[in-house]
Length: 136
Image 1 (cartoon, rainbow, N blue to C red):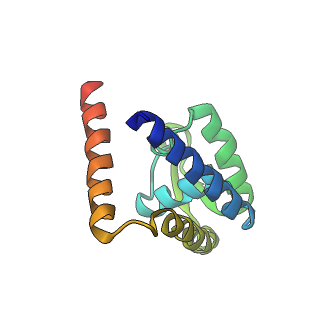
Image 2: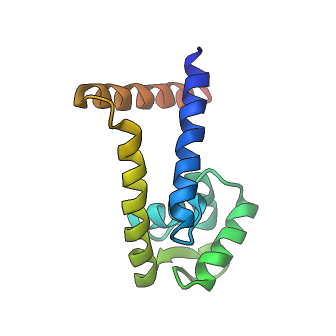
């Protein structure tokens, strides 16, 4: 089996498990990812959020419409000066979602030793860095 196939298989399994757990919290993976990113980097633009959660700008508009309608994200400013911030209610929902995602991740890596976990993290980071630098 190729490394790329194994990585895709793991990614697909992780996404499915996250979808299932987050659905129980009435949240999607893109919503969770958006809240997580905005909690760590408040004030992002729509375009920055789209890049950060790996969706198109068009998908971000729909995503933000839902998040703002639910009171989880607020948009400050107008036009090109719009900046996104997680609300207090959004932070509370994010905390519950983060716990669920951490449980999924723990299940995924529980059969690995601490050494193997660290090695996997270093390896995956090195792979991403190599491909990101090759694109430039």
